[in-house]
Image 1 (cartoon, rainbow, N blue to C red):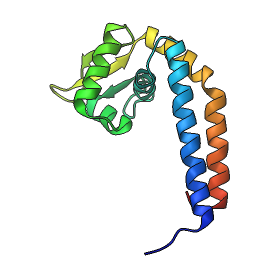
Image 2 (cartoon, rainbow, N blue to C red; image 1 turned 90 degrees about the horizontal axis):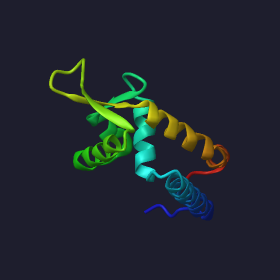
Image 3 (cartoon, rainbow, N blue to C red; image 1 turned 180 degrees about the vertical axis):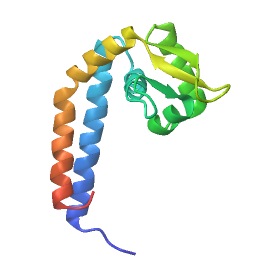
Length: 136
């Protein structure tokens, strides 16, 4: 068994602390804007859809958010009820559903992206510093 160096423990702790802080700030800022952190993440992944910006399939959302199909479905239904997204038949895959962000969803997402800018930058700087020093 390989024993980690003290620096490895320190790097792992710094990364976990930064990720948890980022998650917590995201939760708080999203709540201030009337959304959950998961709804924010859902909107972000739809807005940056891999096949087409502003649209994503359920399988893509499962993969990118690392959540199960039933959880994604519930998130989409709640976001749709709030007018943030709409479900549509996928033009490219017969019988499949894609989720599109609405103009209201775009507005809410833009507010959160701006509000979280400092936290994203703080995390990005830490990741850059860690990648240059030791293993995480």
